[in-house]
Image 1 (spheres, protein in one colour):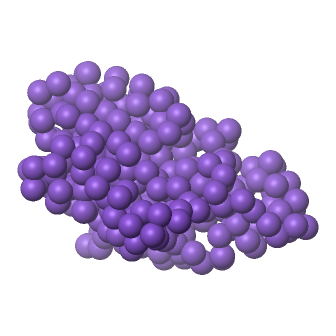
Image 2 (cartoon, protein in one colour; image 1 turned 90 degrees about the vertical axis):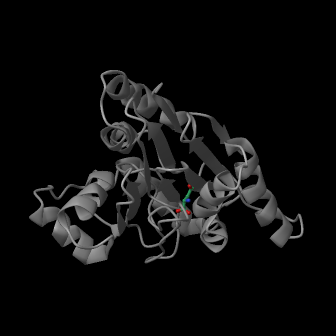
Length: 262
Ligand code: ASP
């Protein structure tokens, strides 16, 4: 099987390069996506993922992440603070707990118990931007600067799929808001018999359409990855009677390595 990796946005290029290296050394898709998206989580210049992300309305950086492997296992963290790599905590939830989702203080405590370090992930620039935002309390949500998750999907040489999704969510979101990224089936879904799909964009819309699960189901019905992503987008557009003031995008990778995005 030819290893393949895809991800969302330009900031996924570094993550893809890193994941490709792991896959070409016969590595596992699960390791490739975890280590891959950590490249983006670490990059302080990426304002929408991990360390350096935009704050919520109260000035806190709160992170959402999820991961799925080829055996239907899933793990996610919601509203996690002060931890640099939410994706790795999500993987620990998947592998070292009896649960799938951990939120807020509980997710943080779990991370600490698992050996993660408390770190300040509020960058100086994010703090400055928040102070500026507070003065105007206005933010253009249609701008693609304010929210951009990295979702990465990989197929390894053993023919196994995995996916990872990590974000700081919408800039200046209400304190406590959780998006689609840690919701299995919405921001990410992997079925090793069919394919994998992931999302970026306005989380509320992605949650309502259960977009990633929908795309995998459409691929099961014979849609190509591209057509499945397009169909998921068309359904959202239809619900809004073509009046769209937000962004949503999906990527998909089928079991045979074919991929698509819309
Ligand atoms: N889906 C993310 C969220 O709603 C944001 C994004 O990907 O643009 O939290």
